[in-house]
Length: 475
Image 1 (tube, rainbow, N blue to C red):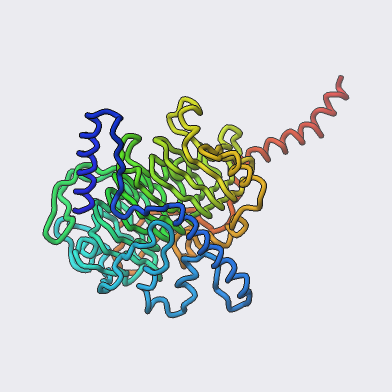
Image 2 (image 1 turned 180 degrees about the vertical axis):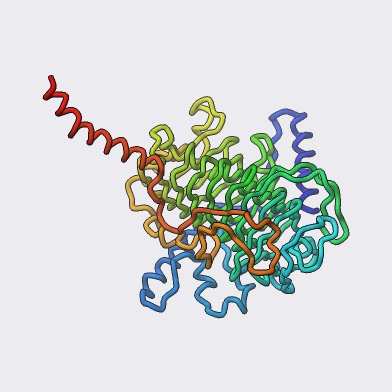
């Protein structure tokens, strides 16, 4: 509620200042906004470099370190399942202060059903996330939770799917609105569609009418101190993750994205001034097969894109408008075969470089593959772009190791096919439900375009060797 009130106050003050023209300046600062975002970016690099160096020093068969500072913080502990809340100390970037349910009781989801969005049953996930106290939420077994309506969270919650295979799908899906301190880890989120025009409970003491939702996988609205880690997201109606309306202090890490058009939206609109304070870290993710655009699409704010792999987008990888700061460091950009889609960046709605040449978009240590190129802009861009092009990518050489386990962990069933929760258990879906995220955790496979090119080359070679000589003989 405090976050919501603050944003409303910002909008009112902004309107008052607009009445007096541009002679008065207004500095907007969101709750949770870091005063020095460059320092946060440098700290991320420091942690990566320390983790990578440690891995090199400990090269032996018993070493489980990957160089990924988040995973190395907890995964090497064979007893991690008895110390789950340690995860809350492993965050990096702008979302590193997300506590989730740290210090709270453990709640175990035993019932995958979601039959009543107003009066959820104890044992369900919906019953847990609306509670007011901190909770660390785990799952008794593999399950599919098919939502009837948006799953609206309360603050100080961790949804921890480590050790089991949990899918969230259906209406909504996940909504984080005017809250803080949430961690979501190791969850499949897919096939989310629009829902609403219904009553939905958001706390033990409140429920209300919800209008039609967009159908995002995870919708973040006016919230702060959030961390989305090791999730697999695909096949949703609108965005896979949308972060808007003055949200800040967020890290999106170690996720796998696939099969989607508009992947990630950061910022409500070009004119929504509170989003100037939006700060988001996007780290160690694998933007995988069959993605088209928005990885992310940014409006205002400071976006740190670090040590991700982008695999053959169809339109562009990173886009923006409204003068966001985009700091791209140590990523691998693999361009598609389409010669008209090699550019990593897109200034959305721009009519020319005069409009965006002052925007601070920079590329440092990025690895460009298959003709990919990043159009930088802003102060000192020439020096920074030359540096990025003339030195070995900072940490980009370790990308394969850093993103090795992107997406849901411990899932040997990356191609899941028809999925069931086991004999006699409810899944929330009918028996012929099919889910396939086409994720194999490796470098991109040969695409359909490559097969077409290979077919054409073989056909031409056959014609050249066997048909054309015969034509010469006939003549």
